[in-house]
Image (cartoon, rainbow, N blue to C red):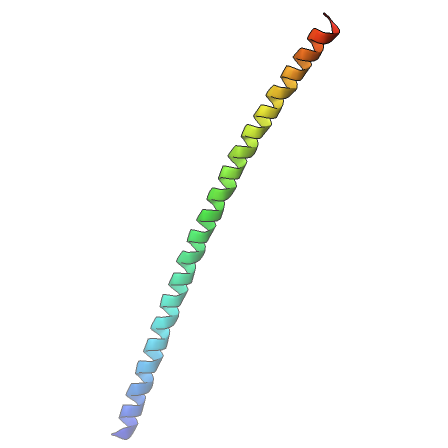
Length: 74
């Protein structure tokens, strides 16, 4: 009788530990996916800002060239 209770208790502990491991792995997996999504969003926003800065720099370069042409050839 006592042996059966020990085996049952041990089985319960094993099942509980397995459930905890599965639950923990799922939480870690979803947290990592969420974190990667947040980082990807930050990188995408930074890329858009850098593209905008590059476009502005090109516009300014063109304006300076145009101004230089007007000053030199006027």
